[in-house]
Amino acid sequence: MIFLFVYGFIGWTGYVSLSNWNSLVPDWSFAGVKNYLYLFHDFRFQADLRNTLVFTVLFIAAVIVLGQLLAILLDQKLRGESLFRNIFFFPMALSFVVTGVVWQWLFNPSTGVNLFLKPLGLDGKWYTDTNILFGFHWGKIEFGIPVAIIAVVVAAVWQMTGFAVAMYLAGLRAIPDEVREAARMDGATEFQLYWKIILPLLRPITVSVIIIMAHISLKIFDLIYAMTGPGANFVTDVPGVYMFETTFRGNYYANGAAIAMVMLLSVAIFIVPYLISSRKGGS
Amino acid sequence: MARSVWARPFLYALAVAMSVFFLMPVYVMVITSLKPLDEVTLADMWKLPSTIDWSSYATAFDKLAPNFWNSLLLVVPATLLSALLGALNGYVLSKWKFKGVDTLFTLILFGMFIPYQSILIPLIQFLREIGLYNTIPGLVFVHVVYGIPITTLMFRNFYAAIPDEMIESAKIDGAGFVRIFRYIMLPLSITGFVVVAIWQFTNIWNEFLFAVTITTSDKQPIMVALQNLSGSQIVQWNVQMAGALLAALPTLLVYIFLGKYFVRGLLAGSVKG
Figure 1 (spheres, rainbow over the protein chains, first blue to last red):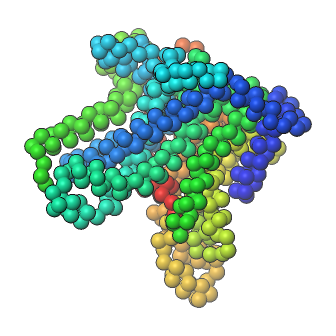
Figure 2: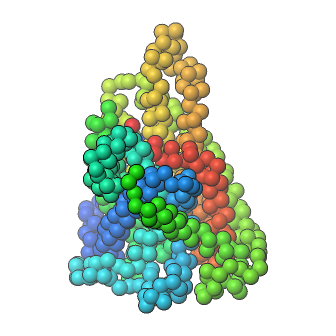
Figure 3: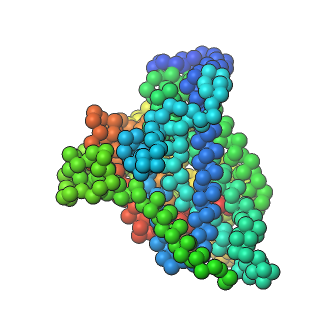
């Protein structure tokens, strides 16, 4: 059954993406790669690719850095550790839609966090900002870091960091105390201990975190849909949102299917090697 | 431990500062939801309400209650069914070794990572064909099918810890596939079921993509209704925040009371088996 619903339907979607079905009425005639060509010349899709790339890189980097920092912090045998841990973890129990709604209010351009930042001379427009940092022309779009994306990254990091903390914490707990003792005996400072010994030992976990966060970020949809939508000039648009709107609001089924196939491919690039290698290492 | 005197206070300060960052949205959510509409202005966003006003909860509840009920009707059967199927699958894949079992397992696992956009168009056509489009049972069906990979993974990892000898000796005593599952595996799986059920409950409750594409208006689960609240005319932020809190409440309660199992599920679903 899984095979029909996963692989069969992927194949079906793949076929739709090669067809002429761009209206309400299914049209199964073969169109070749027309829909893909259209996408890659499309301003909106080029913007989506840029946004996804920027979002994924910033999001993963922030989650890893913050995740390691907080996990090590929790590993210091602080009083109230379980309280702190619960505070760092709870956003994971929330829906991306809830997160989006709340952060949309927090990042409201004329209020929210800006009330704190204004005295510092910063006046962010956040997700309504259409500026692109470090921009240069690429295809039809300006490539660079859209300012508006940063707001979405903050919200996503807020929600998903707990995941990385939990994984790193499990990793830290698995490192035997003797390792630390030995390093301290050799005169290593706490900083050296973590930087030179513990962090390298956590590297396999970082690989897992990267893979898991990457597949979340490459297919992200609900957070952005609830928080910002495509944004002016598509500064916060991603393939997930484009696919939804073009397919289910615009009835361009073949184009939507093509976007979905591109998304699937981008996720598969990360997941397939990971699954194969964990099969080999695991059994 | 050789530590300078300021190290500890610094660590606490850092932990508290991070906690403030994580709790800030909750603070804003709660105070905004308790304000009357005229106090919900951009300038007063961080201030406490002058009086506690529950009216936005009443409004939000009126609007969201039917969808809340839809979500319950969806999440309970979907969680139970997907957990049961996951237990069966996990049992077969971990204890009944046959040729190609690892490849089969890997192929199933891939199903949990795919972007669901890539199966959505055929899925909707299929649901229309069998008459389940825009129904809660249709959504239950979808969540059960696409929940199988993750629940299978979790149960397989869980069962890997049960010694094979137990199964072997049961087989020698003449117990078959069903009897072993019913009388040995299931009683040992209580923790596994709790972990998987919590995980599935949270995921299905929070899910949005299937919900928004497979159901319309009065059949929609809570998350879609919440999203629609913000889409309608002028956004009443106090109602919006009250709605978000109501929508988040079930999963938050589960997390508060069963957080330990929630984190176990999270690790079980991410660390390879």
